[in-house]
Length: 107
Image 1 (tube, rainbow, N blue to C red):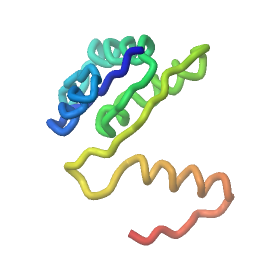
Image 2: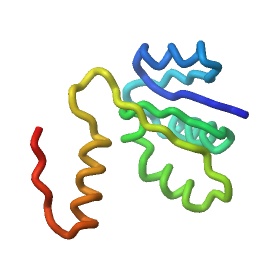
Image 3: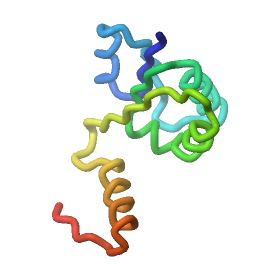
């Protein structure tokens, strides 16, 4: 079973001790590197994506995973560089849309 971790920070390196194949990504991904990462995701069973990488590959990843018969489990972890996360904002927006009312958010 292939398990990979993709990220740009040094914290992601610790997952190599747990048996993950760690792919170090630059802060800004080129088109070729995005294709490389998406290819590795499709051949894996478990993927840990750092939030900075997820933001850059999100749309393409969703399109690909919707058509994949057995998609991998994708876990998005926050980057420790910032105090707030993009994923939390995304979740807030999804819940607001589902409820039909813009929810207040105490930060």
